Length: 106
Image 1 (cartoon, rainbow, N blue to C red):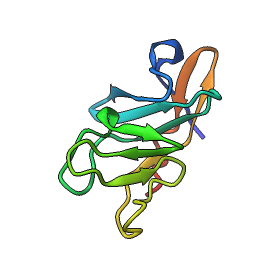
Image 2: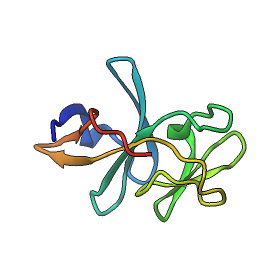
Image 3: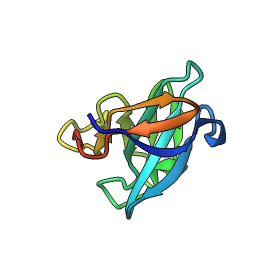
Image 4: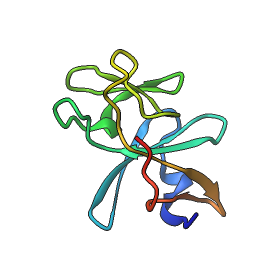
């Protein structure tokens, strides 16, 4: 696993999404109150809504455009398991959100 630095963790909003662009890849970073971090593709597969701007509750992010909901742990749509967003293994290390962008699940 090759981790890259995305953003300082203290810049991320706890309980909400933060937009990050890395080498042309648009990502949504979600920091939970327990310091768990999730990194997913920022674009909703339905109509390309900005997922980092979506509301997050209990590990589920809701697209702000049409309210499709995605499980941050799996990237799978809650109401339609055939739909999913790419997700990346991530962790906080030395104050940075780090993610393996070479391995995309979903």
